[in-house]
Amino acid sequence: VGKLLDDYDFRGADLKQLPVVLLGFGKVGQAFASLLEERQGFKREGIELRLAGIFDRGGGVVGMALPLGEIMAAKRTSGTVASVPDLGCPGGRAGDALSSYPHAVLVDASPTDPTSGEPGLSLVREALERGHSAVLASKGPLVSAFAELLDLAQRSKCRLGISAAVGSPLPSLETVHLSLRGSTLRGFRGIFSATANCVLSDMESGVSYQGAVENARRAGILEPDPRLDLEGWDTAFKVLILARSFWSPTLPLEAARVEGITGLAGSDVTRIRESGRKLRLVGTARKGPSGEVAIRVAPEPLAPADPLYLLGPAEKGAEFDSDLMGRFVVWSGKAGPWTTAATLAKDILNIAAHPTPLAL
Ligand SMILES: NC(=O)c1ccc[n+]([C@@H]2O[C@H](COP(=O)([O-])OP(=O)(O)OC[C@H]3O[C@@H](n4cnc5c(N)ncnc54)[C@H](OP(=O)(O)O)[C@@H]3O)[C@@H](O)[C@H]2O)c1
Image 1 (cartoon, rainbow, N blue to C red):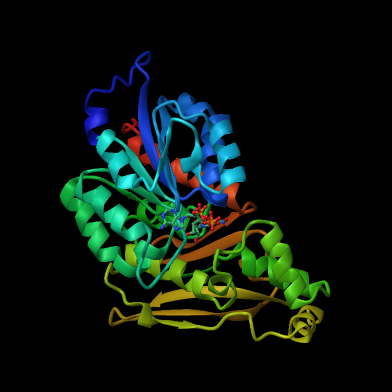
Image 2: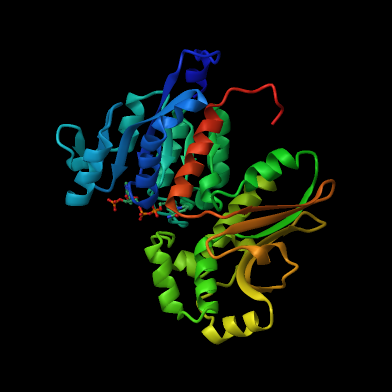
């Protein structure tokens, strides 16, 4: 992106295209491709995001004028984008597409594997080593190799976009890194999993646990591996990645104590609701006086005075506690693949953005 921006004329007419290579063409990947098409690559931002490669487990399609309708149809009928006539590359690698487009940004919308970080980790590593910025919806590479990727990005003078991996579309990173600059962040807590929120809200109105999980699956907000959402790990990974970005890139996963919602009976949820409170899966991180960070994920009864109490079923919110500026609360009423796609686009546009006269 740096190289692209060097010869970019921001004064007007000279609109440039920024190639984007996409790994993963499931719910998020397809929403991202459709969003770029619907918004004409966000041209109104002064730079056009252009899909130059799409990859799934069968291979990929590469080119600067990818026919999205045909690609969607091929995916539906054959299961892979690689079956698109003429453009498809069965067995093709996203790394090879990056070689064809030296300025391209990589988007990782592949499944989250927190142990190996794959399939995204190798490709994100390869992209950063070769000077491509990378934007991730997947948490896998950030749980397994955060410090290494941050270091690689710094050495290669490129950027990592991670907003879509930490509870999109909440602006948690911007809140702390920009709005609380100069203050000390003492801790934060939030509802980072719309899935757990939806399941608990459904259970409050008498839906069984299994029925509530099925509703979340139909809404497209359940992780490819549902245990991540329901056992609390999805929330723990988001809180861990945020805590690493705020405090220490090497913070270990072992700093987290994690309890999910799988063991809850419908009667637990309704009893708390009848007492005027709401049971919600809350992720919390606090930095102690000697610098140690404790992360906890657990269902908590929230009283009406709690800012997180107000969140609706598919909503997320977080509260940040700082010494100089007090408490900040952020809240979003949207969740799901389309919102995640918009958050990926936001990160790319911010990476490509020219500094403005307004200090941000
Ligand atoms: N769903 C959401 O609302 C949401 C929100 C925030 C973050 N996320 C994160 O975004 C990521 C994608 O989620 P999703 O819901 O879109 O999942 P998904 O529907 O299961 O899609 C995953 C995609 O990754 C592809 N893939 C898997 N292994 C691959 C490999 N080895 N090489 C290339 N492609 C591979 C799959 O290919 P095939 O199509 O060939 O199987 C599929 O296209 C996950 O990491 C998730 O945690 C999701």
